[in-house]
Length: 381
Image (cartoon, rainbow, N blue to C red; front, side):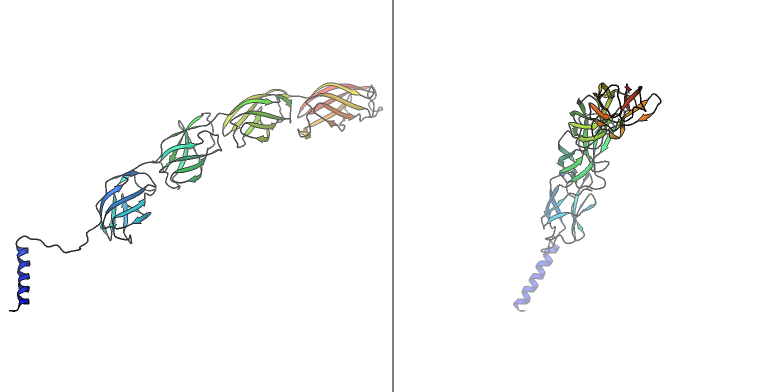
């Protein structure tokens, strides 16, 4: 028997002995399934970058994937045989475990991951009126979708803001219109859906106030300027005695408007400024035209004489031009309307009626401004 045959027999005997004597034999380089050894961090919110450490993940991802609480993670950023990184998606469940699946083989489950809700760190500015834009800074806001929104809350009242921009750490929105509430303190909450929401962050909604009215007495149609604070940059409304006024200009601390036609007569009237559903009040004296003196080139008045009427609150150009007039009426109720040169304190016109028509009789002159009148009597020649 040659030496090669003896060597072969010796190997067979050694192998048989090893098996029968309880020895073991392991094949070399046989791969095991994926194993997760660590997760970092162990808590976080939507948009958090997660790192899984372990073994046998595979050099490239290929058809392998990560599952969290039964849902596939689609936004993997890096993949190697010992490490996987990915961003926690917006639809992640509140609490769960990660599993790595490689070639259909499942890893062990990771230690539980605790999902944090959105967190507000700051709001800038933290005070403002409806229509103003603010920025909410924080974390775990995720991405905007049909279920995300921001609310301003006061007790049972809740107002939803219009969103202008949304990232995982910053939201830009517009302070909503507040109707029916004069509250000044609200809380802002970021919602991912009906069950996941942030902490409350305080926000102050200032109450508008009127500190000045200039002038505080004038005729219908005259421009009035009110000053104060918290009127807002977005134009609201002004009413006088409940009637809507024409707005000339509007800023946060100054508003100019024209006195509307008042049907309740002259006197003290309430001004109401409304901005974003919030109101401020003041008062204004609406004046009827008044005559202090009048003069003519001859007495008694005759045809062609220049008539000058002095007084107040006649109105100026730009006031309600279509609703002001001077009328002459005789004892027989005959009516004439002369052409008038008009200023706020003086009226000028030429006597329009010949002496043979209005000879030696009383004539009533009526000045009308915005429906408010002043009447006085003169004698025609």
